[in-house]
View 1 (cartoon, rainbow, N blue to C red):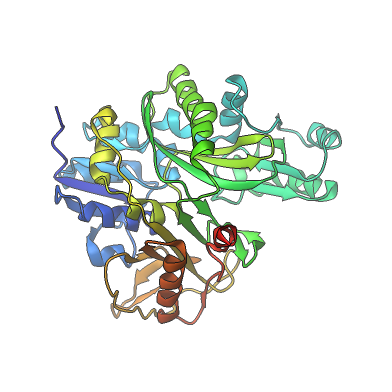
View 2: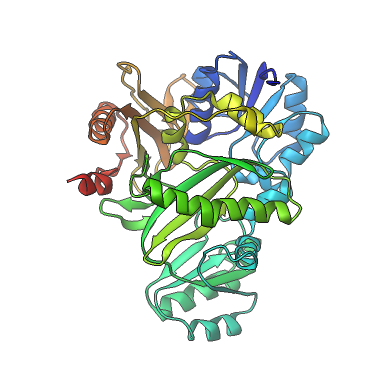
Length: 430
């Protein structure tokens, strides 16, 4: 028996990921009433937004009750780690996203690493530390490059990949002595550096059931040719053909299925997204990390490729009925170019007025991330990553051409983007 779909949905978050989710919800055959909190300048053009911060769990629950929301989709990791889903379920409101115990898989890198090692899921060897001296001693037993990670959430900035011992030692001191990441950096892990090409694998999980969404590749470095500092993501494309059907089958067999089973074996009733960062090493695929929400900007390329109604998919997962929904995916390619503010991920301006083109047709999206509405009702920049320009086309080259054509039609003073999103896959096609 198919569950009736929700008539009202609240999307929690304020980024490009949440704008993509809102857009998909509005296209659902169920035609639900869609709200967002807190939203952003672009989301506010599409649905009613409420200025409730993502870390205000009581406020979000009160909002959902007041607006008679039947389903909440939680976008970012912070409210998940604070127990928003637990609080919503206690209030009798179904939600998509793991409860607090499942969110620990992202909120604590040590927790995840211990689970991976316990269940012998392929990942890099690692040790955990709370004091500087033993951490420095351990570094001297490993080979460069070194990976030093803060245990807790650090807005994607709690990882140091150090090419030299001196830089690794500085990273250890920065976290354990310098308090660079506050409580998140009071415990660290040092792990061997994995070498290869990265890919993003997103699972929609409901207990021991799961489906694999289209594969994707993110572009983390700020500059062309993967240069400069790491960011939250400068663009993505899907599918990632470096993950061949044979390789995907191996990932499902050796990583996805064992991970879902391990989480369940630990007594965690996980209903949400398990985003597995994979390194395709010469020894086979290995886990870099787990996230417990959709990636950003990966969501902006995955959701437009779904032929299945995402609302039906997420609703079924939240209600332990994932087996009732068949996942269908379009045969197209999707590509997202992130338009940022010059200076990101360090210091960057805010408040630049944005001019946007009229979209010419299907398969074109401008997802807002760091935007807001000014006093004179103008959309202006309000973050480091400003917009996600996404296109869908029969070939990757066509998607690239359409996306950059749109990017060139968008104007604001501090506009910056990488010009090589998708180039790695295009090079493989030659």
